[in-house]
Image (tube, rainbow, N blue to C red; front, side, top):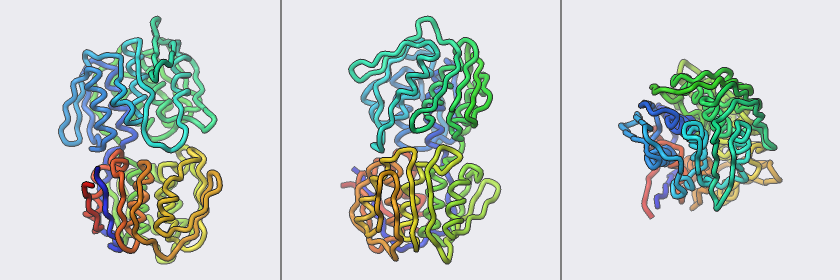
Length: 420
């Protein structure tokens, strides 16, 4: 099992190119199941979650060819059963449900795994399939969904007790593109990754309007064809490197980034006293000379993303003054707090809120990654800490960051990957 040693105190400077979005690529890969024609997808990041999804597609019977960041998939003869051994490794595997149901009229998928960051039920996904006329059973850890009479368009509201669902919106959209009639999704997730999936589906011949808003309208078609598509840049990776620059950088330029998709992060960094300069497809971040505490409240897009909360905690740990972080999307998503306190951070949690008193410096220590974004936050904390931080369970960070150690080394960080 790999671990990462981060030797703190080396300022970051230079250029980093942002990879394709992990969260956009997974449902797009799943959507290739909707057609028997070849699809070519570019800028698929080399991360373990994408690799797992490709393995699932192959297990379902699809032909998969991969060359660097380009993937060619042909799902000509596929099966409706997604295997437990692969599905359990990541929650996003649930998004094969929609396309398999739409194309084959039935699907069996194991209840998925992934990060342990609180309760993330799939009930909204199942309710959406039922709204289109499907029959749902849960048996022995498997979800069995059938539509013997085909799927029919309907009006579906996806708002749950913790807001809307990105993967649920993806699943419903993929099922509805081949359903008879019109489907209207109210309370749809408005994230850019949903809009990117819609663009891919439209390229296949789907009729979709409103993606990227809370109301999406889909007119079903009889079949879809192959297409080519380039995945959007990963806004969470971009935000992570923006925070790294504010925390431990002199001047870092991010390339292949869409500034409009990281506005919430940009606003907080500026409020905390750092310089963020936007350009066409690029952002430059300079650490401020007089940083100060700030407040964030996580919300669905375009609000501050929950996937950036842990990284901001790392920044605030050494920012003078008091910072307040409130998590409304996954209120239990604070497993990184205890590990940062091992490094000397002053953080106090009450429910879904953490109050952080910035300290002069953190100290390197052995820490344990508990989920994808927490592991990224521990890497960031280690960049500015005195001494060496040893981050165990590195497989978490490999789920969503493409070659993060290589990219940090190119910026001047001293990090090394080792086997236990």
